[in-house]
Each structure stands twice: as structure tokens, then as C-alpha cells.
Length: 546
Picture: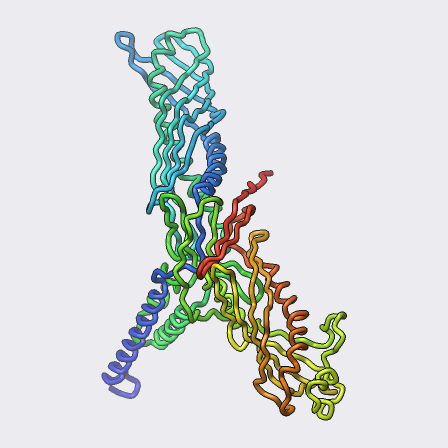
């Protein structure tokens, strides 16, 4: 071909090869992304006991009863044949459901399926108008209808959507009405009895259908919407999703240059329905959040309803893969409280990992922060008592200490409690007259730390207590000195400045995965191997309707 013609066969083969390699890479990355969605151990488990279900059921029945009382019933009309006499034409209109009562009901766990609600001996009252025509006889009036012994059975299927939020739907509903009593007002009692059976039969069918329609709407509307009040779903950048995004970007660049990948692929939604690109997250602060997405559908057993959550802290700036797996989490068979929360060591250790990745485990101490009760200041004059050469090199200068964690802290949970042995680097500086900093020495501080845990206002709160600390020298820019001489002063800085600031943050706590308007009481705290167990009773505050 000429210079202005199409590409040569060699160019086309090269382009096809490049496109094939690009597609293969894209497919490989997609496989990695989907592999990360495979079942894994939860970092956090919520267990709802029968007592908790009963409490939720009470409020649910109250809502359903109000919804059923709002049912709109259609007019009923028709002809009813009477042997040897002809047809009775009747009309039932202006039906008003004055009340619907659900006095007896229970909720049951259906293992491996979900929940079942059984309602018995329900009753309702309906008022309305009637009109009848029979040959030359015409009459009309009002009536009162009593529906008795209504039985309703509702099966609820529990699951989770692509974003990790819980879902609920009505998998089955049946209503059976045992009796309907109608009281007509009017002159011709014998006439009403002619069409009573026809009215009763049609009314039963209509009300039975309407009840289940209302149940389906209430479950799919009110109940599902309430479950969606769990922490909002936000886009999260997992390593796999980032990698997939880069591969897709390369793809679509090839498409835009006229290469062989179909443009249709680039128009597809980025998020695969099962890809971990959405998460149910609770934002903690400007640096970190907690991923509370469900890792599996809720599991019903004979005694409890267990909800397995990812339970993973992550940095808001950049979400990286956690370099350690969650342990197996098996809650004890306790049933004294309405709800239990199992927080594994993985849950807490990802907090340290996330805050370390976000650069949040850095703290600076200056002289202005020294408590008034401490007799010495943070300056070279104070430290010259332990490091004499400071008087010659940096006489009478203020100092700054920069505390940082060289690695994420890692805690252990045993039946004896929570413990950790954090390592803190302490870089000491002299503040020069021009405000620049001169490196003095770098210390390493290790110690035994224990923690106490509680729950306040729906948050896990904590407090650290520091035991014995050990100081060692990593590097010195001012010559050699006896590190042990600094032990007492560093202990004071750590216990009187650093520890109160850490405990102040821990007192703010981290949110538990609770839906809207839930308060916890009667708190139980237990330590087990590799996890913390929190038990509580629940109080729900209904929304006020104006």
C-alpha cells in the first residue's frame, strides 16, 4: 500500500498481540480482585440472642399493627342468586378499618434460613355502608364488621448486598381469617342474610391478600430502610480495586487510540457486584475509618443470629492490604444479654496498622507542654546533668522531642486481658536561635502496656496503663553518654504528657456497628483468647412523628 494507506500485516499482528496481552492482564487483575471476596474469618461478630430478637419483635409488631390499621379496602359489589326468587344485588362501600390488633405473636429462629414471625388471634373492626336491591325492594344503611381469629405467618430471608449492608425480604407470607361477623343496621333482617355469606367470603379473600401486601411493603420499606442506617457505604480503594482500575485505564487508552479492545468493555460499570470496591464504613476521624461490611449473610442457628463483619480499620488517605489475617472467632454460648459483640485482636491491630500507615503515630513534645508540677524543663540545661557535653555544644537552648512508632503496635488478647509492648523512637533536637533543629540523639523506648475496655454511648472506649519501661540508645550526634541516667526523666515525659494524650483519644472511643436510635445498657466486658466479648441490652427510641 502507499504511505497514506492502512497498517501493514505486521503492524496489525503486533497490535493484536498487544491487545491480547492487555486483555490477559486485565483478566488476571480482575481474578485477583474477585479472589479477595472469598470467604474469610470476620474481624468482628455481632450476635443477637432470642432476648434481643424478642425486643426487636415487640417494636416491629407495633409498627406493623399501625401499618395494618391504615389498610385501604376496596368496595365490594355483586349479585347473589336466591333459589326460586332471583338475584340479590348488593353493594358494600366506604369501608373504614377502624383498628387492627395483634395481641399474640412470636419470633423464631429458623436455622440456616432466617426468621419466622407467627401472629395469632389477631382481630380487626371495619365500618361501612351497604346498599341492596331485590326486585322492587331497595334498602341501604351502615354496618359493623368484626374480623376474629386472624393468623399470620411471615418468613424473613436475611442477606447482604454488594456494598456489604444487611438486607431483609419477605420470602413467604400467609394469612388465614377464621371468622367474620357482620352487623347490619336496617329494616329487613331476612334480606341481609341472603347475601351475607357472599360478602363474608369475598371480604376474607380481600383482607387476607391486603395483609400480606402490607407485610411485604413494611419489611421491604420500613425494616430494610432501618437496616440501611448502619454506617454509610463509601467507595474504598483496596489494592485489588486500584490495580484493576489501572489495568482498565490502560485498556481504555488503547481503545481511544483505535486498537483492538472493544469500546463496550470500557463502558461497563467499574464495580463488579461482588468486588470489594464498596464497604460499610464508619468514619472515625480525619485519618481512619472502620470497615463494617458483612463478609457473609447473617447466619441463624437454633439460639442466636450471628452477623459476621469484616471489622477492619483503614487509612482514609490510602487503604493498603493488611499484612496479617484475622483469627478464628468463636463466641461462647452466653445468652444473658440481648446482643453480644466479638471484637478480635485483628480488629484492634488493624487500628494500629491504619493509624501508622496514615502517619498519625507521631507526637512532638516541647517545653511549653511540660506540666506545671514538673520541676525541670525541656532544655539542654536540664539534659546537661546527664549529658555534660550539651552545655558546650548547645548551651541553654530549648529542646524538642519527636516520638514516633517505627512499626504499627501489635496487641494480644488473652483471658487475662489486653496487653501490648509498643516500641517508640524518641528523637531529641536542640532548637537553635534561628529556629532550625539540631539532631542530638535517638532513643528507643519499650514498655509493657495494659488496657481497660468499656462501652459508652455506643463506642468502645479504652484506657492504657504503662508498666515498666526500658530505654536504649539507637544513635547519638553528641557523643556517648549513660542512657540509664535518662530513664527517670523519659518515664515522666511518657507518663505525664504522652500517655494522657493517648488516653484522651481512646476515651472518645470507636463506634460500634449500631443502627440508628439504639442505646446500650447493662454492659458486660469479657476477655477471651484472641478476642474481646462485649454484651449489652438494647433500648430503641422510636422516631417522633410530627
